[in-house]
Image (cartoon, rainbow, N blue to C red; front, side):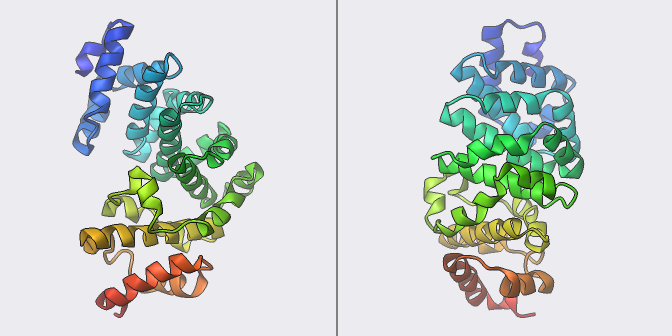
Length: 277
């Protein structure tokens, strides 16, 4: 399908992009990133943003998925104006577009590493996250907060991140949420996350930033409820999470809401062999 993009007219470009977006699995994402038409495809996805609501949904949906690959890919995307296209999508009012944009920013902060995080701050992403964090849509709000805590976890950027005021919204929001109920409202989290995705949250549990620790703890508590219902706790909670240092920080340092503490304690007592070395 990528070969159809070379020299295509706009209607065909949208059709091809919609088809690719619907099959953006991990293996297909890897194929796209390694394809010789990758730059062309990214360029077409970027141009879709802002044309119509339908094209904006497609373009931002593709960019959201591509930012969930690797630090190198994230940097390539930023250099190809993909981040600018996502921020352009943030100006709209369509909820699906905003969901894609918030998730794309979270993915870039999460997968891109420190160099990409610096680039994000240069594009004032922290300021763009502020209105997203006030969205009445829980998916948009949660991804905006996830993005801001990843940026704040970078010690070189924390003071700059604080300027937007977005970081201050994290703890009040988490304390107002039930980790068992939020997945029902956020379909993106309804089935839980893979172990590889969750491993990227682990460093937040030990970072100096208070808001980052809270959100990571909340998310793991949320995963407990989802995976317990699926009887798949072992998928999410491997040895990387339950090492002694992380358990110590969870038990002694977190000032989470009672709901989060309760869910984590449920996990500890229902899986004692994973807690007691």
